[in-house]
Length: 323
Image (cartoon, rainbow, N blue to C red; front, side):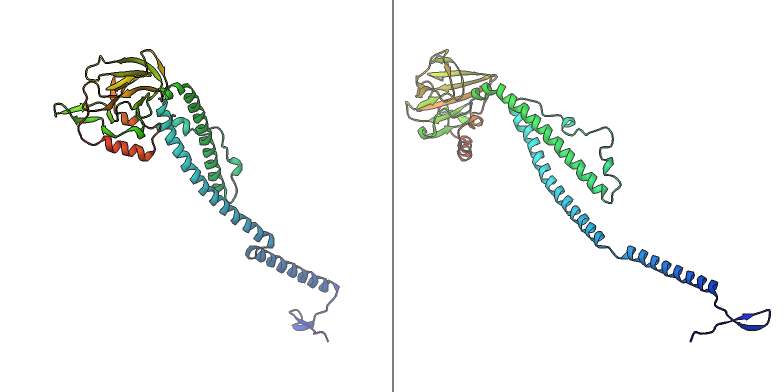
């Protein structure tokens, strides 16, 4: 049985029975439906705010994975940047020095892209800063690689132009290692074998048996092959061009004549004991634009690192020269 409801009527000062007509029922029904709809809407809002849907969870996983991939990419770009920096250092301070070329200006290597904002389309996203910074780094590395590639192209062209220079620079020992008794004396202050007083020794003495082959250390032209230079005895001078001249002194015999063209490794003469000499040996000098240089710096053409270090150690010993 349905409950009977009453209301207080102030006009009659009595309680009157509520009559549930059609209008009353319609109004209450509408109020109930509105309450249900409002409650459902509130629940949906709460669920949307605090509970992730399967699609949202998938998107969050993809976003997290993207951030990891960007992090890995930046680490790899760090490695590439280190390699490029090393190449730039070698380019400026080794390769271009060899070919007497100026290093690339920093303004060329570090030039930006200029113009309008290249990364405007990457703005407005949750991870825009990460994406933009990574894109900028990638563009910078790409440009640096391009500039370095063009620089190496220039060096290749310089190498072609300098091919003759590279073949002419003295770059081997004048006496083969297997024919040496020892490297008797190096470049620097040494005791004169005749006066026993300190004297600047401007070459290297290679002790070897009389008749041991002597080889040209670079391409060039024989400009002297005589015994008319004081103290040198029988000696040969080769003009290699580009300011380089080498001298081979105290020879026993010649295998070349004045005006003859020679190549690196050609047999030019034989070890002897002529001139101002204390024993069979070759005295070897390297001149550049009139300045006498330490020959040990020119043996990079055939010696291993170990052999080169041994030669340097022997040449640095303070002893008595042979001439």
